[in-house]
Length: 482
Image 1 (cartoon, rainbow, N blue to C red):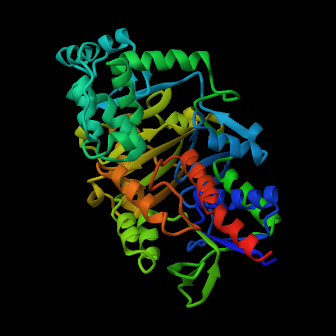
Image 2 (image 1 turned 30 degrees about the vertical axis):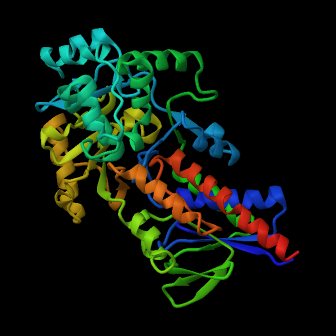
Image 3 (image 1 turned 45 degrees about the vertical axis):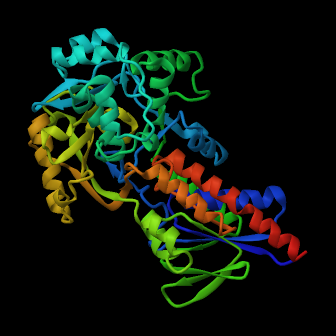
């Protein structure tokens, strides 16, 4: 019996998860296949990058990319438990949960009662200065407007404006959405980003009424074992990467960094993979866990149609700037998780997380850790490559909004070019076309945040699904060589 070979391209969380589940399937099914994981970068983890900085007898936990994951999507929590990290998961601070919105240059409370991004606390909305009285009246029409039955997808911005009014979209929903997708809500596909909103409209004829029902149901059936809607390991998300690498290394996976893949072709039942150094290898199955535009380049000689679809998925560039201060240097109380900035404020930043409040264990006592987000779809020209300029933007934002004038004790700048896929109108059709193309290539699968979800749980799940998709090809090889 000849061992089959599976290649996973991409060492971010999707690729690492795919490698983990491939090894796990090997053990469960006693399949004699070899797992190879390659990445063009010099380190594993992709956009998960944790910097642990010792200071004054404590430690700053600085995340360069994502800083937490959603517990209500089960795949990340389940993986952490399998890796022995279950007891190391921290939730967000339950005592100081305020979130603010920058409105006309001032921080204002985000109204209480936001369920599924939809306002449900009428008293809180009535008291809020984020929405004018005409805007509040328009929001109330959501309870009266009939459900629409469009025969096509619509943008998130158009949908929310239709149900709640444009002012509610621009002042409440758009800044929250931008914090997730760094996108333009007037271009993002509702079906690909928040499909449950359409479901609420159709089922309850009202977003607010539906959100109230969903909120009540979630309280009756809380996520088992979760202490918070968001979780993170004690010393940062890098713990997940480190545990996955230890598992793969212990199970004899072939792990290669600094190994760019240039092209992919097929000869008979085998895939031939070409590397930048000219070496060519054969594999029985391939999982591309790279950004969609990179997968498009790799696939161009194998399937130009599939390559073209992948390459057509747009991406936005972003940056994060973390700054550490003494608490005494912050004029304003950091009494919440931070604030978001609507596009209409024309600021260079889009949000600021008060990390040391959101996760107190990420900074030594007596210190503050802040993180400023810069860059969103349509504003790529405003995102400089120069780290000093990005730091200057972040410090300017903190001075304008929080009055911080002190020199930060520690700074870290992370630039993520073409990192945030944009699920714009037409994205569902692209996914359907990709699925049709993949049917012609048994043993080939795609994974990552470019397709059906951008969060860590979605990426982990995509890696697991990709392994399931190529498994028949590996089993067939085993049978043929038995």
